[in-house]
Amino acid sequence: MVLNNDISTSDAIAVEPVPITPGERVIIRYKGFLSDEQAQDIYAHVGYGPNDNWQDVQDVKLQNSFNGWQGTVDIKHGGRFNICFKDNNSRWDNNYGHNWSYEIHNGSRR
Image (cartoon, rainbow, N blue to C red):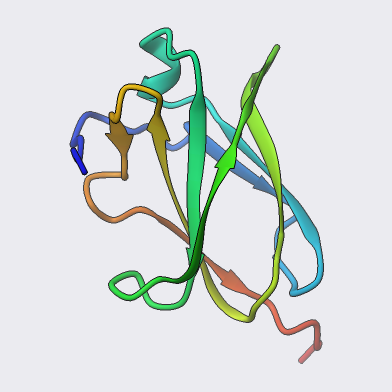
């Protein structure tokens, strides 16, 4: 796996809805540097758990749309939802090795 440490801006990724709740379908939108490279395909590489020990990892093919690349994921677990991106040329956008990570809400209100 080739990891890329190029600049990833704060608007490179959006996930909706937030907070994320198990059982929901979320939309992932990506406008990072891989989209500037004229990639034919971009995938969201997603998993659950701590950033250094992802579980239930899958690649979700994103569709090119007018506002960047986007796809959907059905949230299966609680804990943390982790995302990074790769293209068809094995280039990765992993947010300087930190990936993007979202706490999954348990649905209760405090």
